[in-house]
Length: 386
Image (cartoon, rainbow, N blue to C red; front, side, top):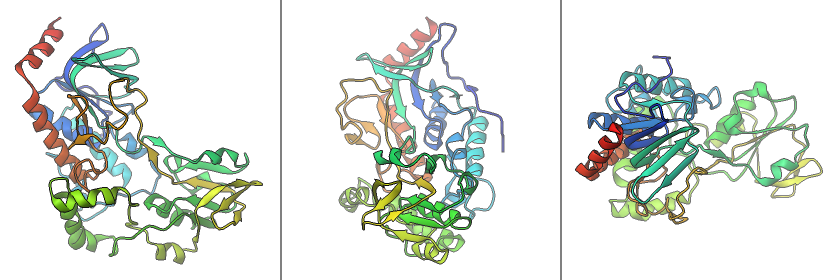
């Protein structure tokens, strides 16, 4: 894999000497969503730029815990134009996925601008204005491809834990070496919580707090990758989407449900000695209190309590509060030219997975091509010439 940080190597124009550039489309986020869309826009010879706060393409994957592996096999983890290398039934590590994304951006010379954190996105009634520090871009279209893991969410009472308790969110967890001696409480019985609790149980007494979710009805692994996951993928892509009656009925229900446990099951946790306890309700007398009245004297707490989707730099007062829900296949109804990509259930149950991201990116690219008028193209070229 190529390990050179991706830079603006494409033909797209970015800020010049004055720090201002005009492009047709700004993509915010150089994860799999932004890169997949970038591939299709490059095929259309569009003027666009991909802005990312990370130092290297793939850093969102590299920052996760050390032992993390993808739930999807390699055969489903490639982006358009470049299959994921190696064993098609293997489950890549998070670093292998990160390196693949970095290689992808470099190979297709996508105009990625790393170390470019967006600080403001506004709209003047005609065009978007994207600010990143001292640099600015104007664009006819902006695609928010920032991913689901934006702002780690922890309960307010986390600050009430004694200062000698080691605590952090799963986003900052790397491995058990970060923990002090003594018991560990992992809060949240989702996939992250289950996998981290299983790992910490090898070195520490571990509790896992929360309401157990459903489990997929088969054992995850190579056999599943060969026989069962293709069925799940087909249903998530082609049955459970907003174009089918069953999809329109089921997607709101899926949105209200917890994601089922995939690789690590409750039986695996019990066999490893993980003690399952009710949900956490607060902190009292230095201990963590549970829904059943228990108090746990923990030495370490890992909050696997999810993330909040947030765009603090979005400065468009005209957008309604529920603008993210008022969209169809990533097209935001309230403001033409604003798009979402890589968002959970944006079109189908599989929209946040790599296969779903690629399909949604292809759809958005076609939509952008259809809405690109000669006037837009002339405006961009005029601003570039000026």
